[in-house]
Length: 131
Image (tube, rainbow, N blue to C red; front, side, top):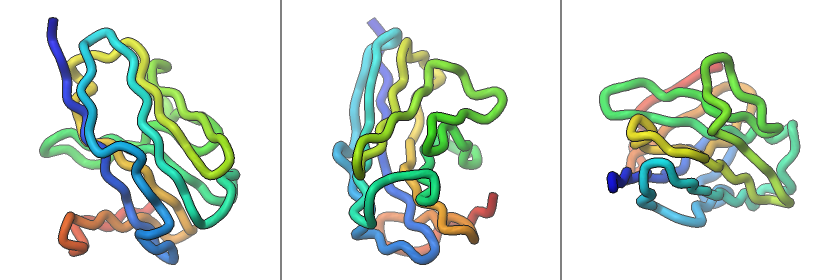
């Protein structure tokens, strides 16, 4: 049975402190074909469309890819096995029927209108993104 490792990291955003986003898990392994759910809580208030919470995926050597926006909206080309849900101040990403190609780092992020800032573990800016 094959297993994949999914890493979970948090994105900071312009105007939002790192303390406002909190990972509920840091990494998780799941068997290929299994289902996994990752969650992120936001202390800046209840999650709604104005918070623009997003789930993103990054594979080694690749750019960040938007998977799911707050209201479970997926961009064209994102498989239906990726779904997002919100409850109160927690947003979750579920991957059902995982594939080997799903091995990646997943990010929870808040969009504040100007872009995302990806920080590395030392707090240094790694990458800036705009919509």
